[in-house]
Amino acid sequence: MQPNKPGQLPAGQAISRAFRDLQAHQVALLSASRAAVRSTLEHFSPQQLTLRFERDNKPLLATSGSRWRAYGRYHQALRQDDDWSERLLARDFAQAYEEQIRLISTLNADHQG
Image (tube, rainbow, N blue to C red; front, top):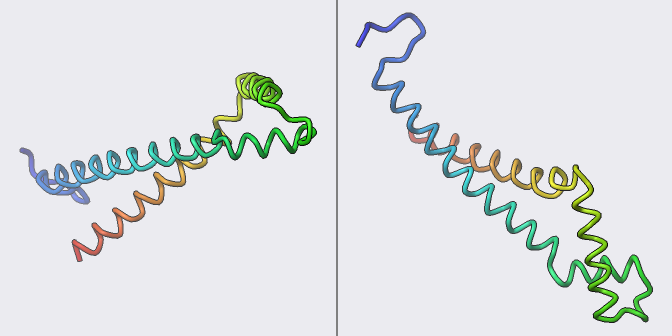
């Protein structure tokens, strides 16, 4: 290995830091993925969909068939809306990812000093 240049970490430290950063990314990615799935499941829960469909239609006339048709219309609208995944998934994913990275950074800072 070559000698360190000014401002450069020693090779062992650089490798350790890179490995720690990769571990943090892996943990944060898993946490964020779980948050996105939880958010999606909540968004499509029967309770949420029933509330949405009753708000959009006449609740006294709601039947299983009318709710199923309403779900079909809702699903089609989501498929045609290019931004819905950004609003629904990316926000929760990014928030959980950043939160996890912050937590890990705090733990690493406490551990080092």
